[in-house]
Amino acid sequence: MENLLYLTHRIPYPPNKGDKIRSYHLLKYLSERYRVYLGTFIDVEEDWQYTEKVKNLCVDTCLIKLNPKIAKLRCLAGFATGNPLTLPYYYDKALKKWIDNVFDKESIAKVVVFSAAMTQYVPKINNVKRFIDFVDIDSDKWKQFAQSKSWPLSWIYRRESELLLGYEKQIAHEFDKSTFVSLKEAELFKEMAPEVSEKVEYFNNGVDVDFFSPAHQLSNPYSSDNRILVFVGAMDYWANIDAVEWFAHTVFPLIRSKIDGVQFYIVGSNPTPEVMALDTLQGITVTGKVEDVRPYLKFSSIAIAPLRIARGIQNKVLEAMAMEKIVVASPQAVEGIQAINKEELYVADGSQAFADQIISLLENNSNNVPVAARERILTDYTWPVNLARLDHLLMPNT
Picture 1: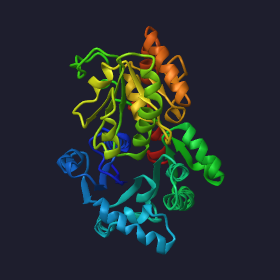
Picture 2: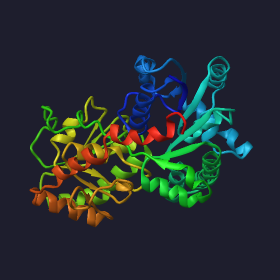
Picture 3: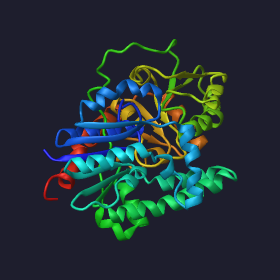
């Protein structure tokens, strides 16, 4: 087996949210085909307990503690150098030394980088193929952040968007191949950087359909039989915070005015003070971290995804569909997901439309959409099917 260097900005375990789900399954795929050297950061203290999980998949690892407060201070260097702030945030001398040492001692045939920030560690290397999984167009996400914030954050985020887009284009030009999380995301990047379009590919996210299955016997976590709306996601992520605040204040009151006893559950780790404040509102419960989100999905009436800021594919939507749940989502939350509106999920744009759709479904809850939703996942969103797209990119002689 060939030696391969894999760099990620966050330890690819546990596969319980966004980027970790994709980076873990990519690591698992690579470990079956290569001798993997993994360099990564750990930015949450509790994640140190999982180091053996990733070490068992690798020949060697370099796991670096990342202190978010210190990393934010490092970002100030970006203002002096004219670089995106993302780069100094994820730069560490010890990791760079380990990577250089790997290249000195081992014959590395390929490099796979997960997220643009980690490409700074692997400038052009003779006879080594480099692949970048951008996942999302992060520069566009910063652009969305800028549009929703006031000065000076709007200026900082706009600067980051513009500089990071330039860096993304540079990396796509220099690396052998670039991948994104969906066909739509790849096509959008090709429009933004047509000069590299021939080097841009995609592979969809997947779902562990055996784990996220309605067939499991699970205990009902809800204390009543009231009709339950549930949002699942990491509650320290700004896009999720914005989504639940918007829904709680502008959509949920419209629903409660028509449907007696409806409840809204916000399920996810690390809820911020803004999110915890929603727990004081009538009919709303903030759970904080739970050991297993599946019971909250299984016994809910509707899974919602009212995201107003999003890029790529939302795993929360795919997982709810896999659990045979009715999903009501914003247009932003379903970008990149190949599912048919009103046949496999429901798309609603704006507070009144979102409320009206949920009210209609709660009043008429008999339809075939949940079954069709899982069928869509089984067809298009399993990891073995989607990772197979990488075979022609990474295998020898490609």
